[in-house]
Length: 104
Image (cartoon, rainbow, N blue to C red; front, side):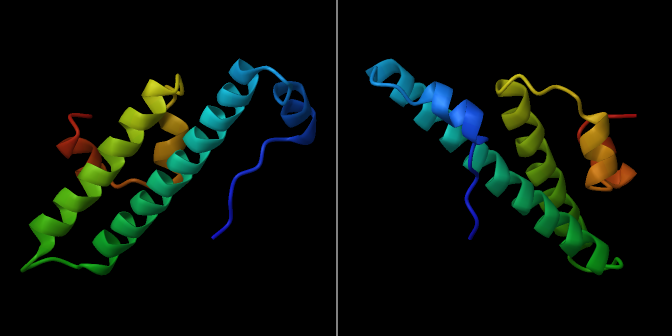
């Protein structure tokens, strides 16, 4: 499992002797890792949805994909990352998933 690392120049600026700076650095690192895990969950859920042509179990697979995408969107918004259009294109999120989230 790869772990996220901040660029060296940012890492050097954030690492200082103050407890607040150390805490801030650790929180940013955890946020990045958490966001990465959420992104991988989205990828897996969307892959399962694409591999499921229809019929029995399709509604559950669609719900799982929509839940993963919704969680990812919420997590990004909490972090101040609000642009969804790029994510929709990058992850190739199907319209049926977006409709379940209330998008039109």
